[in-house]
Image 1: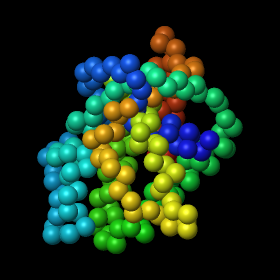
Image 2 (image 1 turned 120 degrees about the horizontal axis):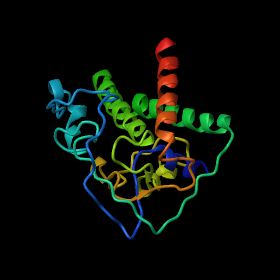
Image 3 (image 1 turned 90 degrees about the vertical axis):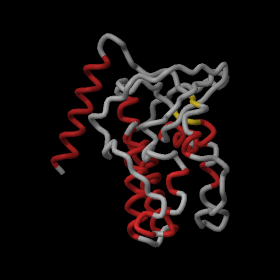
Length: 205
């Protein structure tokens, strides 16, 4: 069940009878990094950043510039509402796991900072999906999520296995859960109101 939920949380998307179409320009109002040319391969001579750019590709720091989504239809998933505390618990587990991975498996503080900013910015694009202004379907990549149970070994340690994918694969097998209350005539304004209220609460903390 947790793995299923994690699937919904992670941005990436999948299914068969696959269709693919050009994606409309994304709203950049909530982008977390500047859209300028950057390379972090061996940035400032830091060896732990070797091949950093290979994951998403050159000049694609947070998977914004070259994201491609393909929705598969062979697997049907339906949204089922759970108590909000249950959702918040699982999300904070994912949050703390991200902190654990970064602090246990990266020793250079500069690399920790760059990797976290990449993670934060990439995940932040999901806000545009939820608000239906990104041009992307609202879903997750089933192939990426399938590795969730392999992150922690039987001894409780974080695994060091190469799962055989890169960031460029994210979105190539997207599942879009059905059953949300989205209404084309009214939801856009109500979702923007929700986004504005949440943003105000965040900025006032």
